Length: 147
Image 1: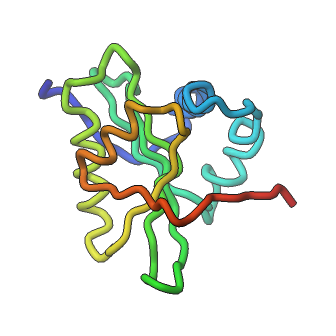
Image 2: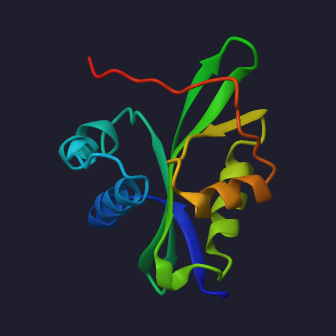
């Protein structure tokens, strides 16, 4: 598919990002919240965004995305944290994910570590992560607490 365009998300992608976030929550069997919907303007469409987001378009229609940010891991240094990845089902297996990952790498050449988490039942994403060389951290558990 040659008409794939990768760009940074803008306000016209807002509905798609919220849709993708809900689809990801469902496949990962997570409680759905309206967090992204409620906070996207103040957290992304603002002067100092808290995260970055690449969107894949086909014929000017958003069909995929990668949402990411950065943090520091004492053992390894700065880490590129991929919070979410999504491709609409009807556009999967057409090279869109590869183009998104390529653009992410191109824009983050100095990053040494890329990390992400996925739902235990999200076997499709686990296969993709392993295919790209991802290693499951069996000795760590991921915890969070809303404060």
